[in-house]
Image (tube, rainbow over all chains, first blue to last red; front, top):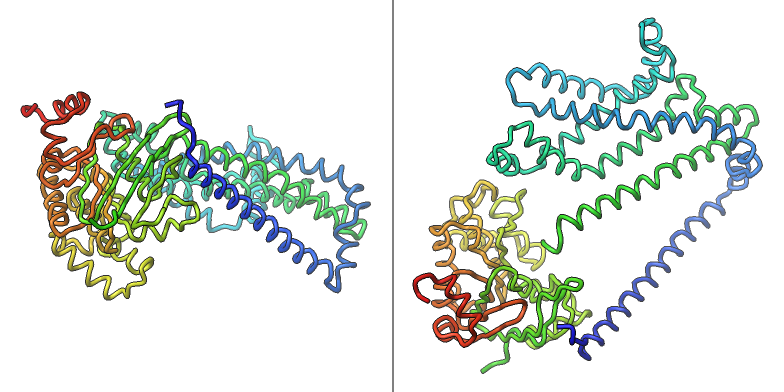
Length: 282
Length: 248
């Protein structure tokens, strides 16, 4: 078999494919440059551009505010890093509770449904303000009373309701025959969920999960409304003092820089799963 | 004899280092029924998928109706709309009713008016004993019914060539008969088919040519009377002994 050398025709075909690939690269580059060029031109040639440029894109103010924003941004990052795993765990628990079939779990199921319905109905910013100002007022023993702590709790509560629905959709999308074949192997229903359904469901919902993660990363900025000195608060503070809003753009850049690697990571993860599980088949 | 409908020469296909098809030569004339036999992994399915341009080949030439379709400049959709394919796992669309499964391609790809497509689909579904399942979703049907529906879906586009990929492999023996009767009818009506199958008696009755594949090569081919009864290759005899108990 190793004595095979491509035939004339095959070499010809490869040349054609190469030409086609080159052509599509050229088209892609050309169109991209054109579109972005026109967009940039449209913005820069607008009548108020000069003014906007000074107030929002000023290099001096960007440098001046950078350190304060970086300090504040650290709070956003910490919030996100701590809340995210908690949300995942809580949301999965809620989703499983909503899918519970056992009779004695009925109250849990109802509670889970109520939770997702009510929490998703309340604006996140409202939850944050309520938790940050209301909970410390209870003067509970044994839990921190800082506003930051309760802001984190509010984010976890709010997002776990959304993410729970994402998980539930994923679980529902797994064909019942998967559960049946697991049960047929002698697995219990919880085991079937744990080892067969949930792993498949999680893979399927990675894109919408990512969507919620990115959203959460940005919503950590909502804690500024509870008076916490995060990146957004720092930027506003600087802006109000110096009458220049460049720091807001700097904050936006910070958030973008944080979200893009996550998106790429999820893409990579999904591609890997796909390659492994759908090798060549339809 | 007229020009062949399909002409494959020196076809080669590999996944990385693994060669799955090599030196494949195959000629299919109109009204031929070509049966591909051989053990699992011998390349039957891959060959069918190559014919439908679902796989990019690594060497060789595939001609369909005189035109080289293995040319990268050929629009694969233009080829596929003339070829029907049925899969082992049915692959019906679970979110559409049986009727909508059958009407989708004629309306969206072939530009047939919906009323006309519906009429034709109903007629075929009726002929294949599915008239009472027309408005059900595929998952409600038994395996045999699903596979018949899948056949109807492929036939609704009036393909010039029908590719059947082990379409009875997932069915129980009783249902196999149902599906094979239909394929037999199609063969008698002159439909050109290339099918991968494990049903040797069916191949013997219906095939005009039988090809025995082993390790990605066509080891021998010819009319069923010679291949299935008096094969030349020892490997073919070995295979037939295993799949035809009592006759070898």
